[in-house]
Length: 554
Image (cartoon, rainbow, N blue to C red; front, side):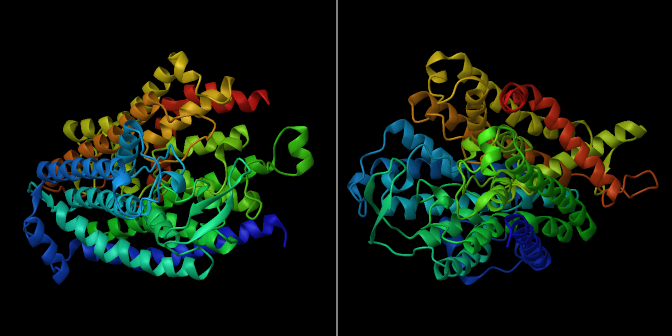
């Protein structure tokens, strides 16, 4: 079977599996977010933490709960990492420096899982399980909880209540993430992903030296990582490592897990607002961008300039030979269009335009389909912008799902779309202005700039992947990227919850002949255009200095 045919079959199988899961999983998530019943174990958790499971919170209280939970999580994880040398199952790994431990704690709590270290050589089993794996669950659940609060803003009227964060957090973990993780951990373990605890395995390091490294509970952590859309790999080679991703089938399963919940959430949105067509419109936009990215990335890695690349028949440098161009490009597009960051190939070795597409995917705001929860709330904010633009063109007050979009709502939406680009561009500019930080680039010129741009884009969008040529384990980069991750995570949540509260207080207005239908192809096209214009106007100069300049000069 040719590689092109195999690639098409993989995409068809993936799309078919996601389509089959879209309705049942989306409906199930809507049910668990709207049910008034609590499981016995959930009631026990509420009692333990002193929460009334039947009491809703104002948006400001919901926000304070998110911030408090995040702050406590950072402090706990930082302490666990710094003290791991005194804890059980530390495997004798050296103590992590304070700035790197702070960066790591921020990274996992912010749902980024950026790693400036080799996972198997810097973390003991206890920290991997009780620290990092726990955050893989709860940080993902926070994203779903926030989008649930935003959807309630559209569905509720004349109220200041948008739900209960602690109830949402508990239910999402116990009823959604944990069951899927258990099921697919068994699937991966049955297909070659190792699942042991104290065993040691001989593997060849990147430097070519044979060394002993601990083989921990990789299968379970791999599923948790992918469902939580995190890139924190147990092995430094991530999903290119045969222990973590042994076959073409496990590679496809991992891509499926990356996309599963984000692509199902638009159905949840449609169910909760009482109009499934709204969900179809949103998932159509997500699907269009995902399909375009997969096609263009595969094309960029297959059709290329350069004598060596043409002689080889493909840009195979940095690609895992078991997967080839098609499966590597499919994984790269899926991981950078979500907030995953897991990789099965070396993005730094992609062709200039292929690598540029991975950066562009993140610059879109990771909305196609985006991170778990964060992708949908990002898309809904852009939908608000699109409706507002349409209202300006026809000279009437814009409405979305029966809610008027006035000055207050547009301020929150505008601040949301400005936050991440500001972090990315300011961080990149400062790094390029400092000679010491420029020295951390492995390459000079346009590619070196792309390495820095990728790092801040990945951090601010809570992705976690990297152009591996940049040295980021320094005091400055650990601090700067840590700030990019925490601000890139929490500031947008502030504006989303404020928008939710503002919408929930409104009385819905009836649709009129002049109301823009937001479930038809016209709106799908309008929303897609707004996304491209917003991203293009914001990031094109930076892309022109990096991957575009490199591609045109090659």
